[in-house]
Image (cartoon, rainbow over the protein chains, first blue to last red):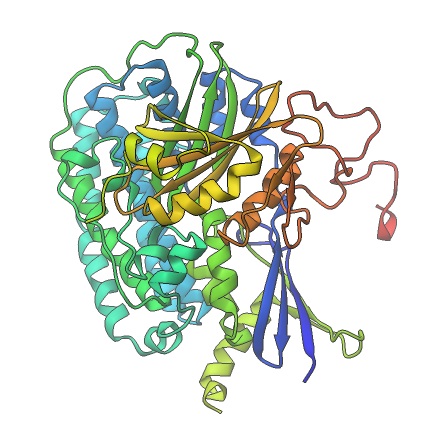
Length: 394
Length: 164
């Protein structure tokens, strides 16, 4: 059968962000994939050169609606390093708590999306309900549910009184049991085992060659986590461990994220029980001396990098952002090769793309005959049906 | 365990190709030329245990376009191979065959900074939208939107299907 081009995206009215995939398929088997990620380019890097550091933070916070705190923290810690000031201990602890709450809500969101893509909507509802509790804690602690606005250059903008901290602790504690339940489900639940095992497989060597980061890399046995390997905030003094797995497939990526939920919830509770006293914001100069700094951060999806250049003024000369999703695209393109068309939703979802999604699949052969249409939902249904009917075994 | 990629080791592995210096981070920056870039990266990858390619950082200093190829490895030291390219006729050799992730990153740098990567298999548009005018690279310091030019989005004047 001739190869068929399957364009997926770029519009999806309800969910996620726009990206367009062009998938070449031979029958049901994916041959190769190209993508267009231009739809969401908003010129934020250019904008960051044109306003002072303090006004840049709210702009960078809007790069992403999930890792908003990641972008402000990686920028603030880089500019602070260039200014040679350090955020006070209490500010670092507050930043760390928000960073780990962000990871918890992001991983719970991912677990729900992955469950949804394989037709397991009960788990989708459960994890998103638990995520709601995390959002409530974030709202109580920072005043906001998405763009927290907690970071400032030199520290944080809001102190936490003791009663607020104890309320947050009460709300976070029950989530540990929920995560234990999910860990048990991932290990035993039939739908997940059937659709995640062996799907989107990447070996350790492939992960290193393609530059994948975060849970995608750690699920293939790459022991790399910026929180430990280039420590920042409070990670060097906290009790936690880097979670790795050697399945190398979507199941492995699920196990890593569930393990990280445990570690994050534990870190949040340790920090909240014993927040260092003192100031929450250091006095910072208006300008930063000329210099450059490669600021790295372990965002929920993996290593996030801001390459910063300052020039002696109150503005950055250059803010070059490399997001974890950018690092993971090459591995997705490779993981999809030779797989079923039906596996696209879960393999793409498995890297937790921060810029994603799709609305419409039109099927067309190279001569333009036999055109049809497919929505993302239909592709998802196709995936569920494909496996339910056992067509992958034929 | 692997040997640390310290300043002396970087300088000896990449001897004859440029100069190494320690920069805050901590990080080791090795400055080379476009002509020696591929050789420097090839030697660094094998000789310095660099198994993770982090990013191509790009900067327009007003005098030159700088590219900073950041790497790390099991030793967790960060090594940067840097080149400064002229702002006119900006070209660098592609590293897409040595480093698969460089393929997408070079397309991004090409869009935003106007660097031509010689030997790239398909230096197609990646981060700028399809309507963006060719030859305009928005992260160049002297780039300004031209009056009347169309940079994507919805054209005000032209009604679309259904009346627009």
